[in-house]
Amino acid sequence: MNDFLEIGNIKLKSRLFTGSGKYSDDSIIPDVLESSGSQVITVALRRVDFNANENVMTHIPKDTVLLPNTSGARNSEEAIRIARLARSAGCGDWIKIEVIPDNRYLMPDGYETVKATEVLANEGFIVLPYINPDLIIGKQLHSAGAAAVMPLGSPIGSNRGFRTEEIVRIMIEEIDLPIIVDAGIGKPSDATKAMEMGAAACLVNTAIAVADNPVLMGRAFGNAVKSGRDGFLAGIGAQNTNASASSPLTGFLDE
Amino acid sequence: MNFYSKILNLQNFDFNTFFKNVTKSQIFKILEKNRIDENDFLALLSPVAEDYLEDMAQKSKILTQNNFGKTISLYTPLYLSNYCKNRCVYCGFNTESKQLRKQLSFDDVYKEASIISSTGLKHILILTGDSREKSSVQYIKKCIEILKEFFDSIAIEIYALETDEYKELNDAGADSLTIYQETYNESLYKDLHLKGPKRDYEYRINAPERGAVAGMHSINIAALLGLDDFRRDAFFTGIHADYLQQKYPAVEIGISMPRIRPVDGGFKPLHNVSDRNLLQFITAFRIFMPRCGITISTRENEKLRDNLLPLGVTKMSAGSTTTVGGHSDSEDESKQFEISDKRSVSDMMSAIKSFGYQPVFKDWEQLNL
Image (cartoon, rainbow over all chains, first blue to last red; front, side):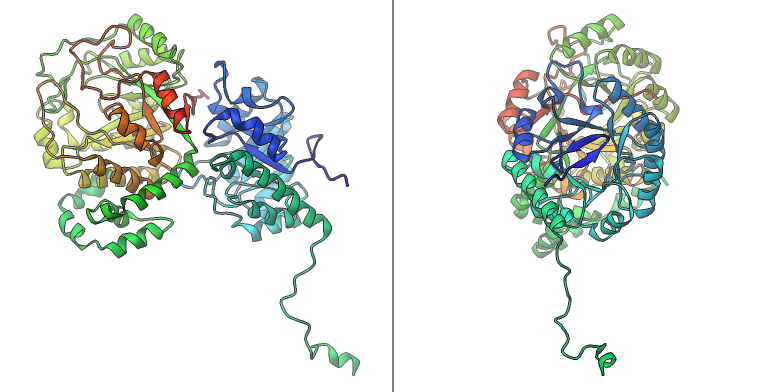
């Protein structure tokens, strides 16, 4: 079965996006990409030292889709500036917008994110904005030209799992864009749950990077995402809350 | 409201009675919480909580890894000048010390920067004594402009400034402000800062906030541990960090935990702060503010720094000297204090890697919009 996630004219076989931060050693990244099957990796542009002989980019295989992010931006202007720098540094056209004016919980600013998305989409970027799950912001991002929407599962780095399930479900149903659950996913089963529900992909960084064995955890997440996706495609049966009633409420119609 | 007015009422708070009433079951409950408040933080700093230090360390380690990963950021201090008008009794630069006074010329700054930069470091902390005449804002600004060529992030640790002066230096390229209150105990502060502009407790305690208003990306505060009872100053440092983070959510707030080191003139710490005390502070603060940076400098010895590395620390200095011009010339007698961990940047990198952590040179870059 050909099941691809298509974003910006790129067909992705894997629906697991990974991150490049928090590793004890960046040289493990190729092994994580291989074990997880992930084809997309996000990179914080402000942390890359392009002048150094070795930086995180040197550890990313050439056939991986780079998703630079605007981490550190506190408003749309900074995000736009970082996106342009990423493009001019040769990081391609994909950009994950992160506008975070809150250092306590790392909550994104939806309004500023929409503004940045509009400007960058008009400049030809493939924009994947990171937001707090919100249907209206999601729709605005669609109108602004986003290529996908990335609602958080729980706060970044919290490993608290898929806590925003109900709102993300509504977004999946109502927004005509891939919904990628990003942040907070702590266990492979969290990713499976999001995928079973119809999420287009999951982005997982902390849970893989700080695991005792990141390569094995990468594989676990790769399998979990695939498993959840298969479950979704196979059509998970509806869950009944009650057993079939012995005295049906509509029985009178047949009397 | 500013932080000075916030803590006015707390100056006479009866810490001893509070600590006496802390129970073991209370600590146990606090360690089960996801988010703790000021009272919980103070309870974690209590003598009773020392029995739970292992649990605190376990929790602190997980919180730090989740928020910062297995990484340690590295930086080094660059002393620009040691001219000083203050008489701080614990400091080697104090105005009555017979130290040789020096200030780097702009050529010297360039030379020091080239040497530091050749070690790979990208974040630098520049320091001066407190002398507006010798080390004016304009002098510091010019130094920042030179350093920008070499470094992605420049932090300043200088005398307290006005908001518009902080803004001027921020616009010039300084993105971070480090300023220590030394002690939050106002009456003790007056006894320790006998002369000079720094004697103004209120002006100094509100300086980090002025930096935040001026647009600094990160603010680092501290008390010099060993001046007052560490539990008290640790608590005030923590609630100062929390106050700043609440009011300026976009600013990265960090704290340092410097313990007094020997200096010329032989000031003896007024209070002993043990390694156990230091660890209690690190872990209690990490649990209180999981996303704040914690710096442990070369004031601490190699072995202790290695052991503390995974337990809450996010930032360390390396290849440090506290002498003006000490990166290019050999160190002379004119140091601010004796450093303890004398490892070079590359030795520090190897040590960090051997603990399964990544040494990080660049985690921020100031962009001029």
